[in-house]
Length: 165
Image 1 (cartoon, rainbow, N blue to C red):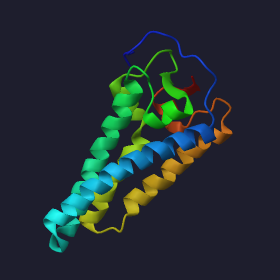
Image 2 (image 1 turned 45 degrees about the horizontal axis):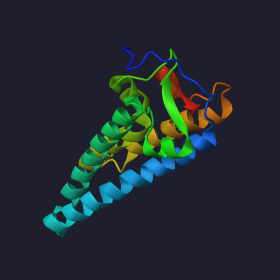
Image 3 (image 1 turned 45 degrees about the vertical axis):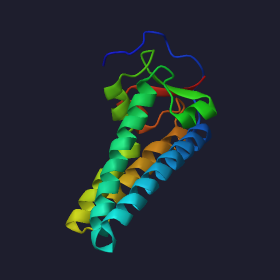
Image 4 (image 1 turned 30 degrees about the horizontal axis):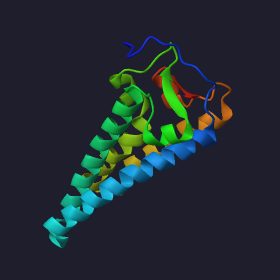
């Protein structure tokens, strides 16, 4: 993995509650954007296009999530807006920032559910795939509270560490 920065990570590992609040802030920001998009699509497509509007909203939501977390966490500040508020950032375990691909890899917990919800909706499985990913996501995130290094499985996978600034 190439590094966007060679500076070593500083600060103690960020714990579960700091990361949870940051994630809630980020999720609310994206939810508002996605709600507006969904509302506009619903108005344009009407009741007959509600399924299409939902599919488009999920796809746009997934793409927004990929770019939001990917760009913000691989950027200069190495933090989303929620992480900035909570004074934490994402760093590579080798030191420095993750590159864009590493940040996307780490952030699957935020965006994969959108795309699986589309698949569930199209094939009519009642959000089974998205639900399974939701459970795996929950396990990965809750691991932060119990592991001594405060890394979720998604952090381990991407060789990342969330630290206090």
